[in-house]
Image (cartoon, each protein chain N blue to C red):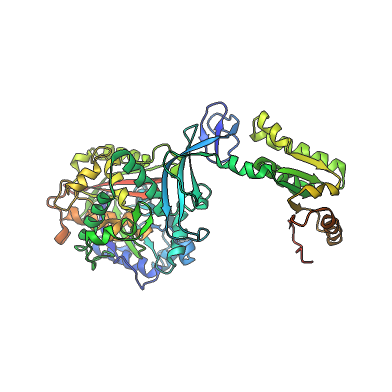
Length: 378
Length: 210
């Protein structure tokens, strides 16, 4: 199976409505693909908080309104922040029935106040165990960071390096939320604390945006990228329901399955997009994906081994931290970046000779993990 | 709260009652103490959590299970805390909840209050209804609770027909049928029996202002 088309909007605080964002992303993906909209057999639409934020559910029908008279089978997928990759995972399964499937992910977040947003995002945590205790999402990952620091000696300076790298990468990505923003280590270090030990620059922003991907059973052009691994795993919704708090078991399980399906190992990876909703999760992801051993991610970051010119470039588009995190679109934006890199079309941020890429998309604090492996068409 | 299958020891964080793997009974584990393993101090307010800063503690109990607990107190990693249910029970032990009406709703509320640790006075005009309510609570507890704990909970529930016993109640919950005249009569009596500090709660549709 192949990625035969990709499209997205700019991420950030945007004036467009949710349907307009969906349409823009779909239009760009179809425009990028040899597959026409009439050749699409089904659509999966991913979104997380359209209900509480925009008072808009039944999104599959909204997508149908945007594709007049096609009356396609369209299904909405929601697995919190992993919704985009989960929709792709489902779409890949649907290729057993259809030749071409379109996946579009969207989130419109900027219309809600930050307090409302915090509450809406909190719905990815357990109602009783997390939400009732005031465990907002930065606090979930603050506890992970604190446990990681206690166990491995990771420091806040290491997290600052992750934010700094991703902000620098986003300067090379014109579609990124913070493509315009120069960020210094000083700014990162002195940002206000949100949930100790995490400060504002450890957190991904509230972004609007959409991304879309066309996948096909058979290759359509030499720009296609092969999908060789697709795996989804789940775990307890609350961090407190688990015994280990320095790694996400679902991500380990999903990546192991994806590597086996693709017949590759972490050593083969040339470009990786990980779910850095909070900076600590980039470090945890590196360890869960087997890119480095547990506790060693801090050393990799200190040695700049994850920079665009490093051993394993991570989040070349700026990641969730600086490209933005419009929840339902995020997983598909990761596929957009890896596909762009594998096609050799990433411009200033191009990773030389990228052949194998991986996306790592997490729902909540690891309640869902989806890993995809993509390879340049040989 | 963690619930464990008595047969295969699988655990849940929800009161599932029966094990889906082996069909065994699932009962609540009641930890006594927890150790602080992690702390984060939250500086930004969110709906329902407007007073900041507050801490969220990652606690580990003696069974090796974890929970998140919100706290406005300062703690350090390694501190030992009593289980929240015990802390609640400490307060509850000194309080009595009066329930007027021992029907389905009354007995249900009585059960929850007693499980939390409150002393419960359940009052009904009909002795038979009051007696049946106790049996109902006994049966309900038997499905989810070990016998020793069940007896402890039941020991906190007293069923009576004497309204004057409400003088001991700190909180009175009225769950009578929707009969305004009856309610007025009962509240008038309660007003003379209960202390000035007693809180009254009407569980049905009529407003107390009526």
